[in-house]
Length: 265
Length: 210
Image 1: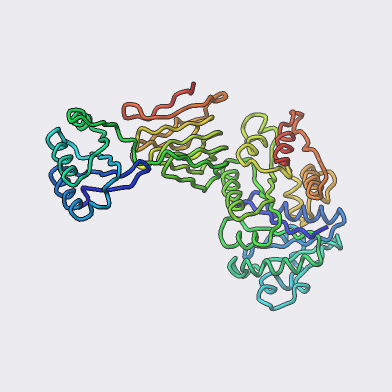
Image 2: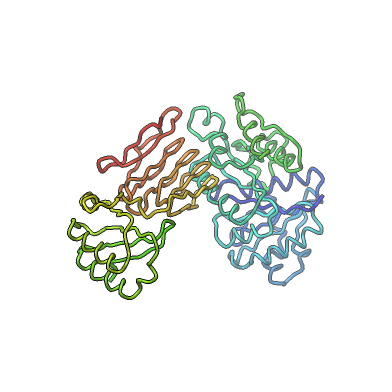
């Protein structure tokens, strides 16, 4: 299998890019793949905290870009999975410290050792976003079922199309089925209707995520967590398996049909 | 200067008279004809009159001037009824102007996403949706084969005769020529039918299609 560089982005902040990156990386590693998660959110690094690796950082992405260390020296092996690595962001610099060309070069080097390179993009559509997008073969756009987040996701998808990115898929995070049922929240169908790109994951709202994040243990390692299961499903879809989207609260899921139809296009 | 323009069209040469005063346009026309008449000879000529208050006398003078240079006018184009009447009195064909905008349409596949803008001097057809935050700006009409939820401007900048068609017409802002409207607050109930928006008595109105 060809190595794949997948960037996780959103436009709006706080929708769960970093949580999804950490968990997707862990889920792919659990499935036996060589995985590295790259934190491109320079100046506001979080990925290390979510993976529980913050106190192991010696060198970071900026050190690699500026030639102060070799790439291998900056990679941190996960404490649980030996085939999962983290390339952390710098906390002291800002997003202009790494150029798109540096990121492409670093990811090219990572391709020779890993089958999955997951890049966690910063929020926004400025320099840091363009840097995180530069090396991507595939892009996952994360949104929550909120009007503002969907609007920003739409903007980002437009920019990705203009940049010629062909494989762009959607993950809808923090869905609350009971609120959707009451008509208080956009449904998955509503979001898909506006964004009209293939669906790769639907992740329910789950308090376990907060616990997991604070502990630095990705929620996919918790077999009882519904959000962990949803992200494992997402990983299986990335690996090419046909995994149906579970119907939320027993409702007939139109988005299964809609998503299959969008994939066919 | 600028009261006379001469343009090549698919049907021949159009001589356009504009400005406020017929006598100025006539003077300028004479000056142009004296210097460059040979370029115009042998062409079919349409005279477009955009000067207000041109009657039979003024029109006869213009035609006489052209004739003295060996040019005969095939038809008169004007939006003013007085001019068309004068043309009739002088035994010439006349018609209303078709506007300067081309009758071509730009066809774009949607969705037009937030932050994207589609603009064209003629009409625009969008096959797909116009999402909230997307913009469509047409010199002519706008037709959306999908949901229109963004900002839409037909007849830009000042043609209020243009129309906006959509399968679901729920724009955040609608402009037709110089007129602007905002839909009422709150979500609309039920499945929407195809609708058309146009200007009537100085207001933008929306009607069901069909």
